[in-house]
Image (cartoon, protein in one colour):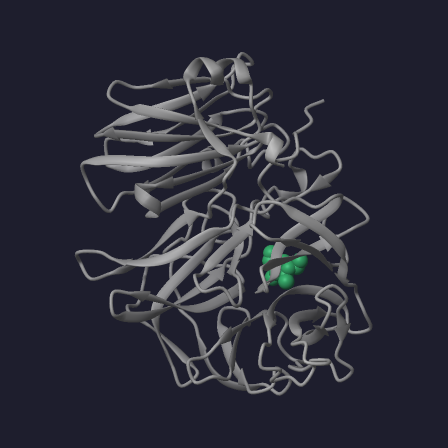
Amino acid sequence: MFRPKRPLIHFTPVSGWINDPNGLVYENGNYHLFAQYYPDAMKWGPMHWYHAVSRDLIHWKHLPVALKPDDLGYIYSGSAVFDSKNSSGFGVAGKPPIVAIYTNHGKTEQQSIARSTDYTEFIPFTSNPVIPNDTLPDFRDPKIFRKPEGDWGLVLAAGDRVKFYSSANLTDWKETGEFSEQNSASGVWECPDLFPLSCGNRTKWMLTVSMGSGAADRGSRTQYFIGDFKNGKFVSDKPCPDAHWLDAGFDNYASVTFDNTPDKIMLGWASNWIYADKIPAETYRGCMTLPRNITLSETPDGDFIPVLSPVKIGIFSECNYSEFRSLGTACFCIKVSGRGEGYVTLSNSAGNRLMFGVNGNNEFYFDRTEAGIKDFDENFASEMFSVATHKRIMSGSWHFELIFDSYICEIFADGGYSAFTSLVFPEIPYNTISCSTGVKARIFKSNSTNL
Ligand code: FRU
């Protein structure tokens, strides 16, 4: 039986099942990651919040479960903030609280909060829910953000739209507006986020929305809108008949950003609801993407587009090809450059071949058709989930960085204008790299003693 090795530099739970990242928050040098979690099986079940903490976003310490199902229901996705000014009044002895907000999924979906001043044990608020609901069937995934006015903003998903709220104390919330956009992507809206990004001397707001398993034809994906956020309302710069996707790969869902970091850092769940519960697994199921810095760039046509780059990993060192051949490592990075059409193939002696490069239409592409084990699910093995492409916004020479970690492949192309995140299950590690004429690859091995 094929047993995937645990990734070295990606977050995975000790056991059980995880999906969406929740409550990403930074305090005093610690990054907190919570996640949708079911401890009793390697499949989705009554949701809890997993909790882990890291000082570099690569090495994680596992902490006790933060939230368990209660009288109001399961603990669905949500967010957390570091309330440094103690606006909530939940601080104790001068120690500011982390306040988490989540959806209680019971008879209906309602928003509840919990607080912590030791940043480990979370105590649900006695007057939950703080945003009640008894009519809407889908009303979930609250994400708190900081408003320029100094109070707190919140965005949550409500069926085919998002709703905005504001609050001075994280407890009393008032609705301020909503946003919806009928475009090519259908599906229930989930896990929204809203945050400002500066570009030159302008500040734009980016709204991200994950799209359920019905998103167009590729399952779970995250779309984005760029615009302005004023008076509690978001206005998109342009109506977009075609959805703009944050990641061109198959496996990056429910991406959200950390609270309280100077730069915006985002990570997602590296899977797709279409086949998430069938991927090969032994002791746990589910994995996060690498954390990425997200910035904004303006194209010559005046469009704003997000640029993604992985946070500094610090465990890779350059090696030569013969070292790579003999290494058989499951975690490595390659930096590839070329011009015009060109490709790279990673392969192994089991006959697995992963291909990527630039095609004749000036598109980056990623092809996992023959990359490894795929018969665990008919969708994963289908044509639809085999080849992904993304149109380049520039022409001429190109480059990309590929980070491979056991069964997750992440590509950041042209400095992050295109990102592809996808699961790939080689039977044994790739140890051969072949490039088409003119394409060059530098190889970096992981120094696993760091972990
Ligand atoms: C997204 C999602 C959320 C929900 C959670 C339940 O993947 O469906 O909308 O809160 O998963 O686990």
